Picture 1 (cartoon, helix red, strand yellow):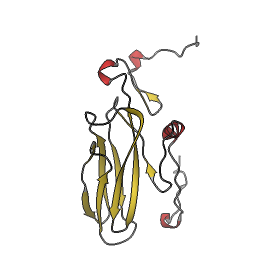
Picture 2 (cartoon, rainbow, N blue to C red; picture 1 turned 30 degrees about the horizontal axis):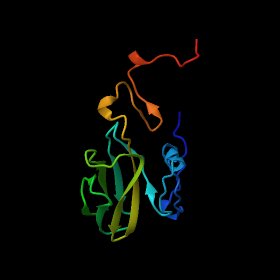
Picture 3 (tube, rainbow, N blue to C red; picture 1 turned 180 degrees about the horizontal axis):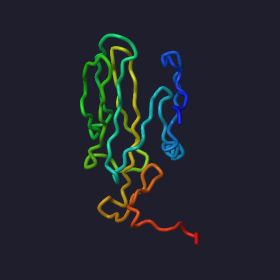
Picture 4 (cartoon, one colour; picture 1 turned 45 degrees about the horizontal axis):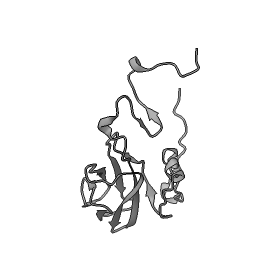
Length: 160
């Protein structure tokens, strides 16, 4: 079996950028999440999974890029708040759940100011008042999926 042809344009700099939200975040728009037209949105962070997200900064040209990042809320933690790179650098974003407000469609953001331009990353946060994570047993849905060991899986309702 040969390698399938690339679907990417050979010169990515010539391809116009478009904002196409992940299908996993479309439900957040249905619940009323509003973001600026030039912002980028990432997958939500949930109190039930307590994950983190990353933002990759990359250089499309030559030379060094200096940057600074600022979280819009004090309960948003960044792995680093500034730096300099020639090719790329990764910044991790996570939530201090003890300080985060309660709500099902909270919006926070991280603003990146660089020598090459600025960008806002919107981070949706899912932190409902109830049920609290210590009250939940079993398997938690995240981004439309429920992961569990095969030992606990059963046939869908109505199947024989």
